[in-house]
Amino acid sequence: MTTLDIIIWTCAYLIELGAVIYFTRATARRVAAALAGGAVAGLLGMGAVALGEARGWWHIPFASTLSFLPLFYIGLSISLTPIYLVTWRLARRFGWRGLAVFIGIVAVIGPPRDYLIAATFPKWMVFAPGVIPILADAATYVGMVAVGHATMRFIAGPASKDQLARTRLDAAQITRV
Image (cartoon, rainbow, N blue to C red; front, side, top):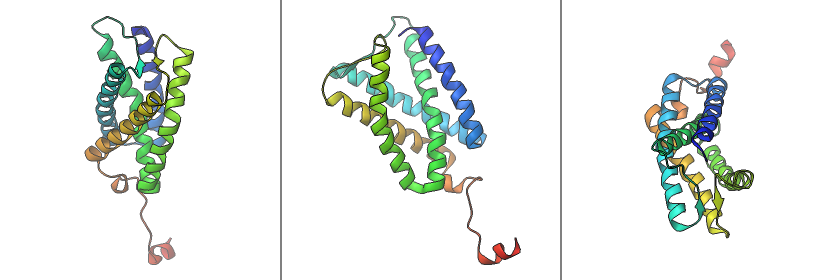
């Protein structure tokens, strides 16, 4: 993986982030909280990459430039940020059950996504054989989504208290409408 590769996919994720901000109608506070969630989850992801490398579960060839790791971290953080705006909307609409289902889906979809990327771009990532790398990858996804969402919730508050949150109308309010 080259520095240019990271810059290109970071720019693509920035475009995705803009679209998610628009479609979720996120406030500036919620976007800032999601960025903080991405930063914290990015640290978790970097730790998982290092752990996977050390345990031999996967290998990600890093460029030997001084700017590579900071760029990789920034790209990872930006790529994670849209997820937290989506989990915010899911938690707002479906509560903790919706968030739990989303995390389960991410755990199932994440590893095949990474294996597809590794098969398509073998210079970016190589997985070791066996079930342990798959489980470690799934656990990494679960951890990044949970930690990032928790960070966003800590900073911006629960989704149910957001200004876009639905309120229940009582019978008197419904008849006046």
